[in-house]
Length: 331
Image (cartoon, rainbow, N blue to C red; front, side, top):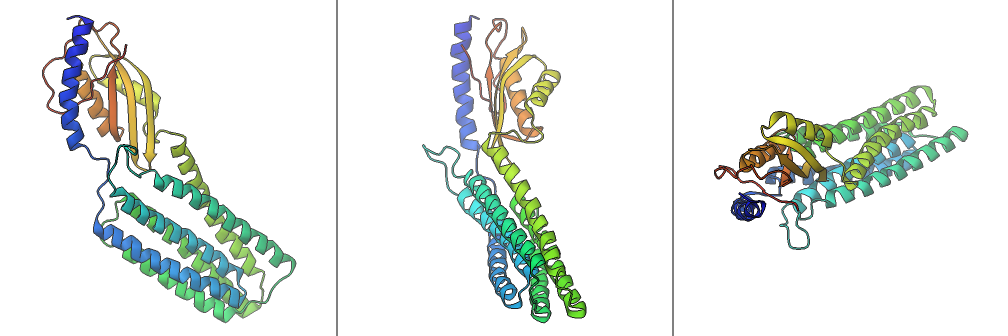
């Protein structure tokens, strides 16, 4: 078979398989109405009490309460982001946005992270000012608001962990709320210390501790969003590892080149690459096995595998594969 004949046959074969693949493939992750409901209700509870905590912090003069309110703001932003991601995930892709609106989650995450850095900066500035000039703190009011905050966080944590807890957005929200519990405990501790000892510096000290928790979350979020926006590969799908596994575990693969692995949003990875088949290899089988490995081992949602046609004159297309594949070509 000549190279041009291979080109013609592969083009028709690729067309047939791609047609089936496009109809069966979905870029939209499964989202349940229950998950959406839990996220939305939790958002309103957390956001509503965050406003109460801000008012309580201002009235009582407690910076620890304001810091905890800042932490609850991070929770509210995370929950709001998760809900928006759920809603946008339902919108179908179109001609101008072939992957839909999935990347909105990443952009919102970047804005979220930058906002959190601003919150941390404000808390640290206020803490320094409090050390220089201690302010009176109403320990009773501070204690009551902090306890209510802890109860609210415990309820939201219980509510979120009912039923499905495997979705990435649910897991993220749970982690945020668990972190906020520490802020509530810190504010309660500060209120008790001030009530019994009158030592007000404990308030800015614990506010700094809470701000460090916020900073940790903000830094992790910033790193993840920038990595995705820079077309970074998922942690378990490094390009060199992909090349090594394909060459070592798929018969008929002589070389792998032009490997690009990237994420369009959290948990959704794509990949393109070219495979040079060994002499006599079954092209269809090689491509199908490569795509299956990329999907099952590296969790690549949409792999596109092309063929490096150099030296493939002795190869064959074989029988139609039971599963669809992308058969590409290069000149």
